[in-house]
Image (cartoon, rainbow, N blue to C red; front, side, top):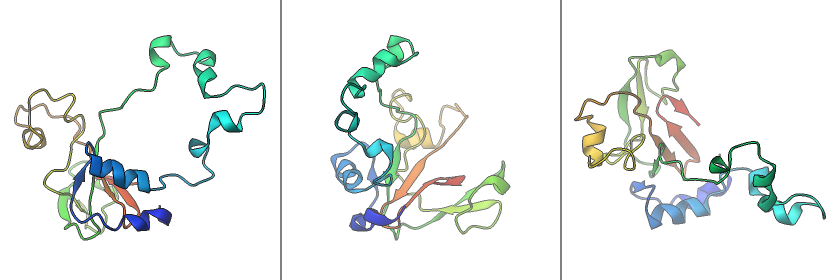
Amino acid sequence: MGGSWARCRWVTQPILFDTAAADAVVSAMQILPVTNPWNEDCVAVAPAGELGCDDCADESDLPSSRQTLRPFYEMNYVLVPDNQPTVPILYFNYPDESDLNGGTSPDGLYPIPADQPIESWPVETGTLTLTQWQEDVNNTGGDRHSITVQPGAGTAMRPGRRC
């Protein structure tokens, strides 16, 4: 994942996903290779007479209520600088299936800031603050996934797996 991510080395402190600053950094990153179909203008490249993006929904076998792109609020992220301190994470389940990122089993080491967003926050967590959700103050339990992106290093990590 290197490439144009190198120009994002100016991330000097954690930046949460839902900010203008995060939008600026992510828009400067080339997430997928230039030749990846997700980077194509499908209307411009469609041969004359063939379907373009506007026609895709008409061809879908999904119900009409599922043909519109919608934000996926479950997995949010934080951008961190290359020098973000790492913290140990104990994997009590499946440490052998995890990228421990330099840690020693069962502990992984990840560049996780104090304001690391956790799965489904803030949209599906009611009035809980991020800190309350991180600490699971209401004993919800369940998954606690998160995504950390180090643009300067060209890495994205979901603790338990490196992307």
